[in-house]
Length: 224
Image (cartoon, rainbow, N blue to C red; front, side, top):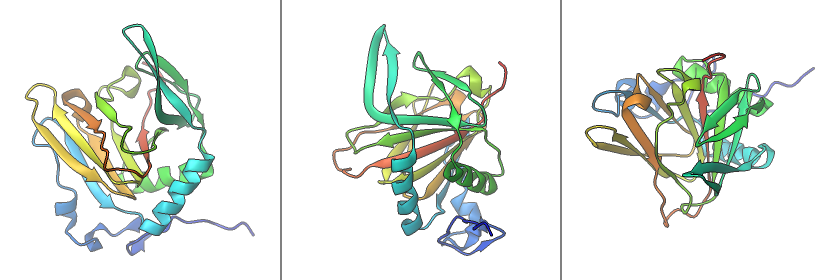
């Protein structure tokens, strides 16, 4: 008989979905919009217990087909220390920073995490971009995930494992900023034209010495 492996949870779950109301604050408080206007960013907090999150981190670190990220700026080819991997339902072509990536087939583990994120958010996804930051010396500059392949209003779910890192938003016009800390085993959802109106970044920090893995689930258009 084939053994079934279920995602472990820190909090009591019903039908595989965590009861967010038992996390220490009301669902309304936990899922309040972090952005004051022109977008929606909801932070679910920690949804996977620390022990299980650490196991996922260790497994993803070893099993993911990591490659150093590449970018072309002003004609100069740059290879970053930060590593990335791209998975999906099909071999989608994802272009950003003037470089192209072909999606790899899902692993069993990534499919488990995708299902978990879909159950929590109520949205479906067909691809995932993973980032590996070895320590606080690696980060992400201001940008928005507004590529044509993601559609006019992308919905992006970000699942974090490993070191806690500061995450920032900045409005493209008013320059107002909002920040939070993404914890080990936590989930953040961005939607409702957040990418059109806000930039986001992961600032570098010398205080962070542990690595972090971030999974950003998204939906690629089949034609655009």
